[in-house]
Image (cartoon, rainbow, N blue to C red; front, side, top):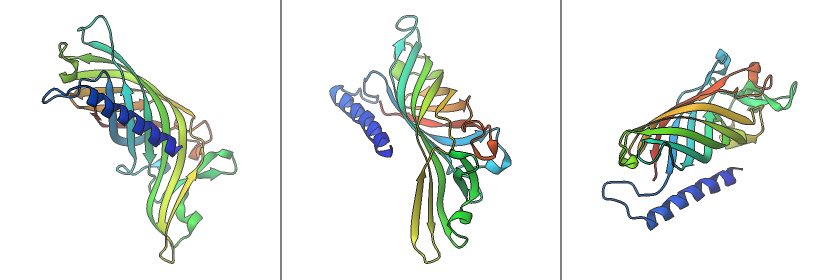
Length: 245
């Protein structure tokens, strides 16, 4: 699944490069290519969670790659566009106190509990990396208003919209040094009770070449009673994005 995700991202970037080669770039401006290839960088956190599900801020990151095409609303030059798209979204959660997700045999294979990593891999290990990652195929839909109606690409803009995502993969990653000094890395690809579909709303404040954005998930991250502590936590992401074209 990771290979499929990489191929998808490479395909979008290849399209970007080939489009730029076909179209001359105005001096000091972006390539005149229809649509946007946006790369989001940000942070991922949980709402409505118990204290035991606290996460570390900086390692809990978000990375998205989306292509969106504009459709003029109310006629060309109105300032309004509808921008549907497709892309890949990846969210990481890094739980505090060296804990991560493991399957919960009391519930079933598609479930999770939060355990101290040392309970599973040994008390005398040194933990270097510890996170949970979830990868989605996302469909973003947004309405934008461009303040400079004569040139949307060079305009400040605001956007509101929503997206729905379909879970492609979820896994934990633990890198540690054992008692003999050997570096080990364990990746466990499981469902962990993660909801197969996510949906939520977001907004963007855009400038030529980059945006500030925030996303609020409307559904629970884990399926009912299948996540750790039967949590009903939802997602909140925010960050910046750059427009490759």
